[in-house]
Length: 292
Length: 293
Image 1 (cartoon, chains in turn brown, yellow):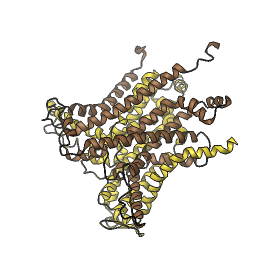
Image 2 (spheres, each protein chain N blue to C red):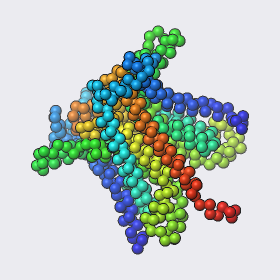
Image 3 (cartoon, chains in turn brown, cyan):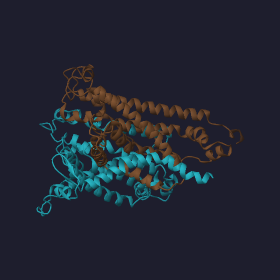
Image 4 (cartoon, rainbow over the protein chains, first blue to last red):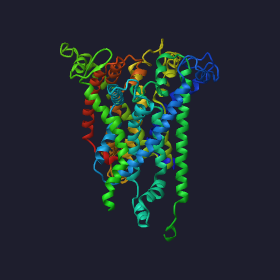
């Protein structure tokens, strides 16, 4: 069949290959360069081969406490992921019924997605500063600040991940056959049973997708966190801080580790989605197939 | 009875998300607008009504009139950058989406290749910026290659920490936002329309221009909204790739914030919000977003 491909196919395939090389090439360069020897610099050629820069990164040695930042980002990421999944499913279910305020919620989500992150971040920072002032005014003098990783930081991340979660739910339910739920109801299922045993198993692969977006977007979030994270930094903020000061491959080593976590999350997510889809097709009913 | 309960259940289900958006998006936006009309000194904001934040921002705009003041110049620069990145991401994104939608016939390959485009989106933007250093730096691969070929005598200095680097990195990071909606629109185009155009004697270009592009328009518009709003508000890519030397609409806000001039930062944020809003409403007239999911 390949011979029947028009010439334009080969042109477009070549273009696509170049695009993929453009996407991945630079990243591969820093992964490779992070494994240099102690004399390594920021550019090619490689100067030896070792784990020196990784060891140095975790030994502390002057620059920021990477281990702690990583742990914070991981915890926050997992929390953001869980909340994104739960809130998106709940809101997604709500949109299948008609309720007053549906359009308001939808357009708020879209706005939260496209309003420049620096504005949202500034707003959250102002909100918490005013809250602090208010608490002081009330007379609580030992109050330091309400701003922090799990208050303003968490909120900033959710304002970014929830729109993605909601849009994915929309995409799922636009393709969902609601007769399945009707059938469940006719058979006497309670609303919770029909959700738990009919709807959820069907949408589960996409729900994993929402989780994947939730975690990776939080793990790498920078713009919204920049003003709203409080006293301690997340990993991407530490990394951004390093871009102006570091002239050694430590920053590449940090980049490699950060990306490794992203890739683990991505492949775990994709693997889970595939396993769930296979399970679905295996367990799917073959009722009626003998009739045709 | 069930129908009376349904709206209540829906509110309970949608409530938590609405609460998060209220606390961490709508209220913050309101505070930005309010604080933009407050006064400030070196170390605190003062809640009295003033337009000082705006006045400071537009300082010298009337006095310099034949020439452009700083804020207008910065906005013009940002719009120029925006246009350039928009054009490049549109051309690249459209071509990639077109290939995936019309020339990859196997569903499995379509998924695999789409994932290949999506995976970098799930990794860190800062790392994808730093990743250009080994290639574009003074002693980077590109300069070495060109020196080795004898094409240049001295390393090119404008490859990194320059406007070129900023555009390159923005295109690198955000073409994805064009590919997805355009692909999503294209995949729904009825293939029989394309065949009909072919049967009626249209050339490939005519089909592209008169059939595919009009039908892919919603995707193009949505992708454009994403890319334009991201670039308008960007301060990180412009900071890192521009070596902290290039001004932009987002960067002004960051500079004011670093100086702890919150009302001035808020005034700039309101201006940026206004400009972005104008661009989006202009674009959104072209399409109904909600139908496109």
